[in-house]
Length: 356
Image (cartoon, rainbow, N blue to C red):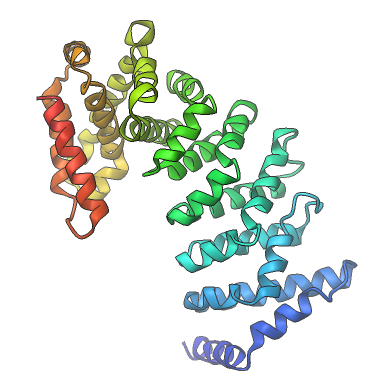
């Protein structure tokens, strides 16, 4: 404890003496030879240690223009992969998780384009090493963390991030989970994002994956797919809504059958966790069940689909009442503490009416 206190005193003294600014000024002056690389690595280690001890300084660190520029430039597509490139990606991912101000700073001044260009390089090739693979995953983590602020979603949509994700989904199996997660986060609450996704041919891609998802990431991928489908059905209207619903109706409703099967499997997965707290049950199948229930209820807003959905549910020993139960539990656990929560509650209430 005494040693920890001493280390904290050192960190605070470094911050008070404007150490981060001095450090950021030095970074660009180090050469790219072995000694320079070692010096850069040590400087970045100092920053990482400071962030681990005092996460609240994250925004102050990124407000150093030279340091922010060094970190973002460090992950540029045209830079060969190295330990420094990997370290820059790791630090940016750490900073992006800390507060909204950091997210905005990282993506501003072309940061979003730099990150997408580096990820986009995977369209043509696979990573050359496990370290490069980890760097790409860190870049995805940066973008996914940033999608919790609306400004970042706007930047991603303008930079054609959704179109890039759809290309990578088709070409790079190892990135499917990350691509779907980023699409899910970026279109959440965004009618314009849903429109871009549909116009880019996303419907065919997402429903194709829904029918064949398997493997160790099955649950995570199913959640992302269902969340995307629910958002598309919720945020679109007119021809776009009809196109989305038609994908669930085509080929004898095979996609709706798949959603029904996911709901049934989630119910089975939940059985051992009936006595757990709500948040724990969400992690063990309840969230997936809620998404499937939303999807089924949204399809039932088209009245002719309601009896068909009812028959499908009977085939897996469920009924429309099970859909309502999932939605009612969702409502009972939403706090009315902000407009977004109230909107979610009203949306779920409308879905309950659709399956009465």
